[in-house]
Length: 571
Image (cartoon, rainbow, N blue to C red; front, side, top):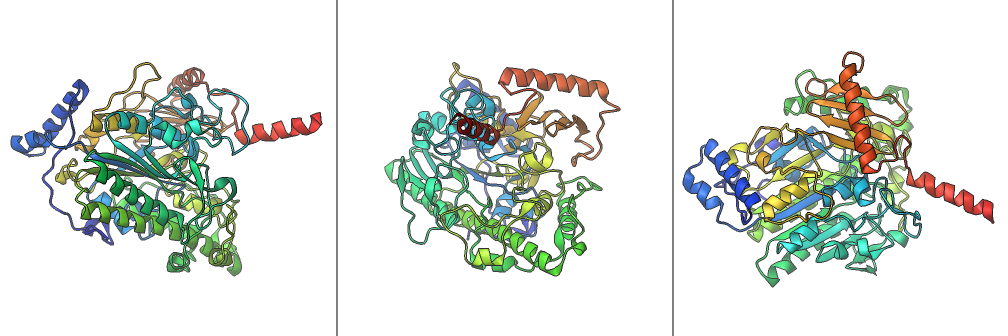
């Protein structure tokens, strides 16, 4: 494990670094950014010599680590009890964002992250079409990445970066033109489709290397193998030349089926017998202590029954499914430790920017009480995605202190932990601090353009994000003064400044002042009716321009079921 390994974010040892911004500022855009960084360095008390030196180094390597279905409060540095010392250490020696937004679901998040656009703009307004089941039309809901966008890999490859990916793609299955190698990546190893079995992926959810299906190797465990292949890819790129690399490491964990290793499962077995109420209370208290929440912030009301009303047998099974989930998160942290150790040993850590985040909030799919038990962890079914799921009640606790979960765009569905770590670029005086300015997935494209000196074509839809470099440099001014929009399955939101308008499908719009109400408990629709009406109009204009099926929602699964019913009736 790398030396930052620590039980607590506040007790991690900090390696001393002279803050430098090792970026190749070749364009006018980057010249402006370089001046901004010099200003920030000087404001933070660093001399002109250090500032000048920071502009002469090599461009940084860039790593984006995306995990799947992890809740806001699962990491230790975000209030959780799950042991995540390696990720916590990244935060202790970097920055934690408290208001970073995803798209509330797997595919739409991946679409926005990799293109800098709304998912509807790139063909994934809902989800990707299942293997062998094309939806039969084109447009915002066609179910695969279209050719009217640029990916991070395409932009960075054109800038001289080696582009590497391991893990979950989930941006289109049947047409190889939208697979990683055809969308800018030099190397790919992982699962093209969505959820997979951690031990033995199979069927149309098997493994792919490059453009070819491959057999599952002996000893395969998705979280471990994806990390090993990522390190192998970096090492291979190093032997070719000294070009910087971009790695997109997209774990399938902790998405269902929760195939925890037995040893990781046993580590947490019995620790959740206090129930979701006790867990929410403990996590909320730690979040306040860490400064993630304003004093007095109350968590959203949990929808579940009182833990004491359940039988001993029910509580024991529920403890087991949550232990499986915690084991999967723990395994991610172990592998982040392996990746960081490799970067440190190969003298690449200092000038590597690492971003860590989740694609949506914890997942309520699996019914109120989840699925599976200890026996299913001990002897998991293979070559299938059947298995353990935590269900709605545990998901609500994992998203403490927020409302809702995956699928929704209330804070519990769309607000993710996001950590940025860059020893050569984030001033040491900023290490361990919180970034309270809001940002979102589309900002990655703008940020990597600034980091790499890359250019974005002007003949396609323009990147909607803003560069996060001012925030990484310690700036405290908002990078967004424009509205940010969401829509998924009719769940919708718009945020502008401190105000957020949000709704569940077929329910009234709600209005919140997030500067005083991060947990969305006090709907101000009645007292701020004019603001509410104005924001509704803004969202409707955006929805029309973006191709949202407004006012009706689009759900791919409902569409496929309707097609099947029609086909049966025609026979």
